[in-house]
Length: 243
Image (cartoon, rainbow, N blue to C red; front, side, top):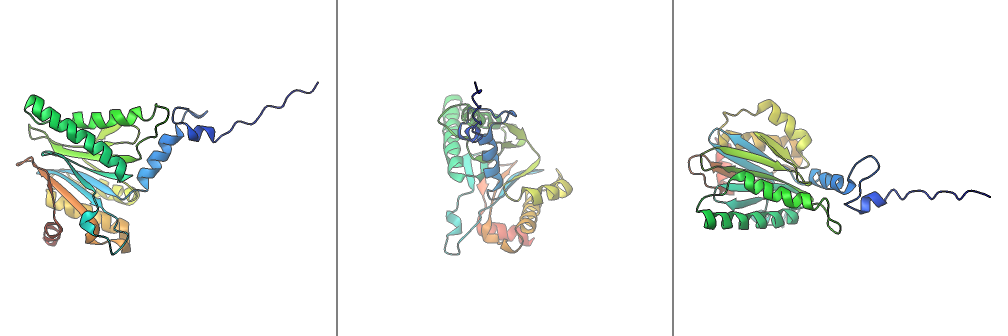
């Protein structure tokens, strides 16, 4: 009697389910989400001696687009902002969630929410989406930057699967390979926000090469003295870069 031949395992099955580990211990949907972030437009965060800055490439793909209508900077609270790389609609869902959390905290405790609470809330939801059937991971990484009530500047990176790290300077998105070595070489904690903006723009110029255009640049400052999130206008960016 011939033994029944074993059917080959459907290798694609590990791709289709977020809750199933592959034989080598990987969640493939999570890895695909990380690849989505690497295909997103570049975003940079930097802690400077006088505040925190966020700089992003808005990736204007059509000359008929209105650059100001492309959203890459998000205000979470007066003292906290964010930018993202990956699927920006996913980012908006997360930002809406923590904006509400920040408002609730302010009303309940009459104080500003601490930045780590915002980061953990985002990452808790991201992690849930790595273990729940019928869901997919958030295809976005967020940079969360702000100044605490005691005047401490902080910058965090949140990964698509719910892990977070605190940085002095960090880059995410398609330009990570080109920009990261520049930050490692030229970043110093005693940079001012204006010199930090210049460094970030120079790094983006090197990464984008011929595609670089100031119209693509979005930036926000959170100074230590005011602790107020401020998105820079096109003219303010140009004036700083002329200095």
